[in-house]
Length: 195
Image: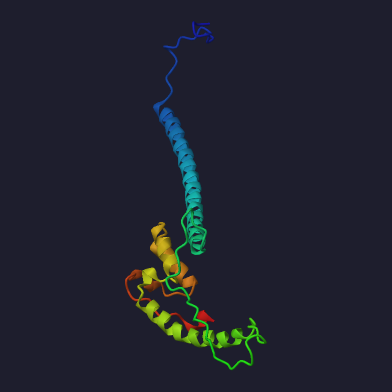
């Protein structure tokens, strides 16, 4: 045995022919090609998994943005911020006072049911008068400030890509071209939506 622990059987290594170069090159080429195939397969599998995770993350991010937009549309769900007051609060008309002849002041007591019928028609009559004014003020309002389209502009502010917002608008039945010009006047509301 030599100093490395290999058995020597009295073979003179100077007389042993070397391994042919063709065999050495073939072994090296085989080793390199197998190693590169293994590394290519590994990198391909890792890339496919990363792409799958990326698409899942994008879907989750889009879902979170839509959920945040829905939560922002609910009044009182903001973090410590008081909800914005409605731009046009509905005003109650003053009660209509009618003069009726009374028999005696002590015999007749006011009943809560008698003024109600006179107030109900006044409220019904005043409602149609307020709607055209509200519709005109909404038509003058730009699209970006219209409450019907505010959700889509919030989605853009939160980083949702424009094509994703337009897709959401199409799913909601809204013209996706409206988001391209935010300062244009808002279209009038559909009468079908108000019912």
